[in-house]
Amino acid sequence: MNDLAETTSAPIVSARGLRKQFGGREILHGLDFDIPAGRIYGLVGHNGAGKTTTLNAILGLTSYEGTVRVLGEDPYAKRAQLMENVAFISDVASLPRFLRVRELFALLTNIHPNFDQQKARGFLEGTDVRMDARIKNLSKGMIAQLHLAVVMAINARLLVLDEPTLGLDITYRKRFYRRLLEDYMTEERTLLITTHQVDEIEFMLSDIMFIRDGELVLHMQMETVSGKYAQVLVRPADVEAARAHKPIYEETRFGQTAMVFDGVDRDTLAAFGEVSTPTLSDLFVALMQREPK
Amino acid sequence: MKSLTALIKREYLEHRGAFVYAPAVILVILAVILFAGAGLGRFNPPNVEHTGSIGIVSGAKGFEFGFLGLSAMWMFYLLVTLFFYFADAFSADSRHNAMLFWKSMPQSDFKILASKMLAGFTIFPALILGALILSSVIVFIAIVAMLGTVPGLVASDPAAFLASAANVLSFDVGYLVLALLWYAPFFAWVGLLSTLFRRWSIPLAFLIPGLVGLAENLLFRNIFSAPDAGFVLSFLRERMSFALNREDIMAALISERTFDTVGLYGRLLGQIDWAQLVGGVGVAFVLVYLASEYRRRYVAT
Image (cartoon, rainbow over all chains, first blue to last red; front, top):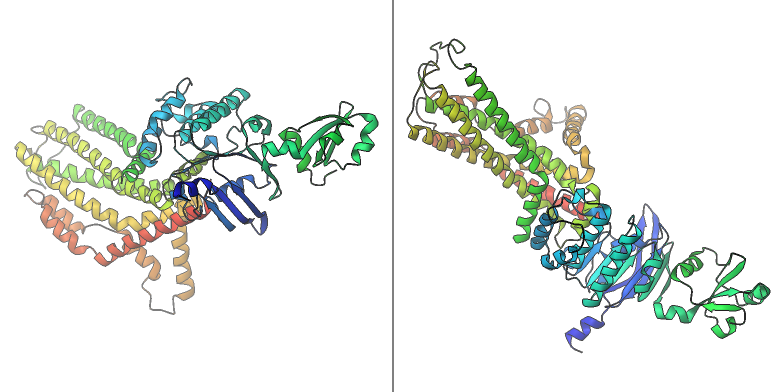
């Protein structure tokens, strides 16, 4: 196997027994996962589930127990070197406010060896962000566009986005993800995204991870989700019969009972009502219940 | 090197208010006061009485006197402003979560803090020296305007003015470099506290040594043969002062000859405790390293 093959086949991110404690309380309980190259991962969980702590461990922003490797390196020990090939947005409001846009780009040209100023300017074409504008005077949506332009202009192998559209209106959110996907299609990248608005990123994900109370409760490819999980709008007369197949979640919507099943044959379920693949938000609600019904 | 230069430029962009805009305002105020005073005849008889106690003073000597006074003023401004700069700059990246952005850059925490130290020791002193030179031009104009109107002030040829300016400025540059190196551990100390405690760094920079000194005086005073006020406070008092003897300065000022830069340098270099200076720079390096390790390990937002 040549070096290139080894590079492309090795996971971009690898975690084994990832644990993290804050003030004596364990936040992450030994996570094990690999993120292969070229995938778009969604990391979804409630507030306080451990998403940001997991990302901070991956980005070398916090210490941890266990083993984490990003591009084969320990991110906590080698954060600065790793950032040449890893770009992240942890908070779209984090751009330095005292700079003008052109000053920011000029600085980045000298600070980041993989930043392409022309590319960043290209991403801003068609937006309201002007090169002479002070960042502190930009709207929240414009800052998000600028920050996305910055990270997309960095030729990074891993792009990590932690709640990148928090607080933005729907127009900006959709534009943000469309640009992100366009960029992904033209570059060889791996994306790792966390967000509460799972429906908005569902269309672009190749893999999904659900984290609950510091543990991964789901980690699979999106195409596998439809084979494993099924949602049925159960006819009233068949509710008891459907329950016999042990749904992992059940709720009543406008008089109809919706059930989510894990690993039950779709042909069997079709006898109880209309079968569909649950959306990520339905699956999220189903799996994130602390005590499955 | 390119990235370090860029990081120093970032410091300039973030903190130029204290080192460009404020000095510019001070220069304008200085010029207005001087020229308004001249316009109102404050330097003319009978407002200025020639007592005869200082005899005849050449314009170049008067300029020297003014230049040195301004040097003292601008150096005091620089040292105080640098103290506040380090108290702010070492934690400034935490404002508005900007730390997350800077941590996404391929630059180590030590390099970023080192760039702040280097900015404080290079570009900002250079800017204040620029302000000093501009203010010396103002003084020069004022002195020339006063020639022939102020009793005892007589004209000098342009070469004498230039020689005075060059002598005082070259002394200022050397004095400033040595003073910055001498005070480096104090700047690094408040920088470390800023990394740890953010805006509380300024009171803590004085409170912590004060409490240590108090503890020494109350708890250990009779155990060792300590000097007055104890080892800690005595050491700090000595370490805080970096200046020539008053007699040396006065001798250079009242001398009828041009400002004796070489002679003053000789006396200055002879008075410096070089072991303290080198040790202090080493302590500053260690403090900045400790601050960078704290920032790397614990400061994420």
